[in-house]
Image 1: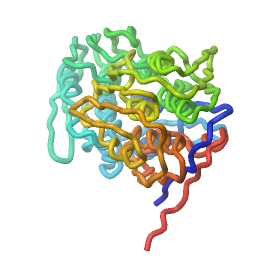
Image 2 (image 1 turned 30 degrees about the vertical axis):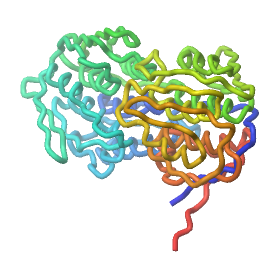
Image 3 (image 1 turned 180 degrees about the horizontal axis):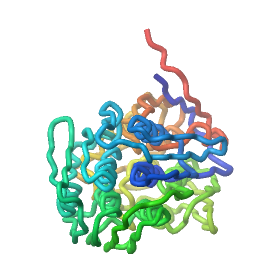
Length: 422
């Protein structure tokens, strides 16, 4: 086991290049199951969740080859449905995309219960509603989710009761090869929804409206191979934006789509952070002190829930009292106790955190209780006096490609070391 050790107090200066988006990559990787041909994916972030997804496909009979230039070739021609390994599936939540992909290709699915970050109850009832609308019969057990469609899957009209990113992607995967047209109302609009749809269209699908709340999918008989580059990761970019502000440094963040970052940029500017936008880069710098704000997380294009812990770390060293409302995921404030170990003053009441800014944080031993909480610990550690040790960093490595190496290059005193056991 390893931990991250940070000797804080050093401003970040220089340039950092953003990797491909984790949340798009996972949907696209499992979407390859729909294609009986070779797919070449570029700009895949080689994080643990991506490696796990590729291994799941291998275990299902797909051929996966990693090229010297960093691209990955996936051929699912001989893949077999219903045999994904439960021990791997349960390690990440996005493995539920196998349900839509298997249903779309084979007309049936059998997938183990997915895992990932523990935020309490995260139902997939909207996914099930969608599968049933397409003609699937869903059976749940303690270990597996099964879907059968004896008469085949057919296009249908579907209205999601709540906005669901995962449910929207699963419907894209399930419906592209269905007979007829599927219409999804109240669809999620996140950039990774658009990227999955663009990937499928590049393979021959007919999807319109991705990025709006109404998506239409006209079923086709088959898909073909392609070469596709994953969109830049807006959450990774936002994390480095906040890290620059927290350390009062100046970072040029490259390979980004500034429009995807508008909600993050707006809140940072409100706090007094300077953000300059270019075609595919932004430059972030911050004065001292920063101002307090009020913020609520919302589905895209609102402020993303996956950036909530990071900005909480920044608000903890800003002037005044801030209020942070979580509007998307239940039980997302479990990391607050870890920030308190570093000297933050935060009180949580239900879905609202009240953050009283302090003059500075101090090093301590903390845990990454989930992926984005781990990023918040890194940010807080960079901004703290003294040494911060972060354990359970496997969570961080699920979503950030070489975070230690990238931060080192811009001036952080950070390293990954083995945990000594007795």
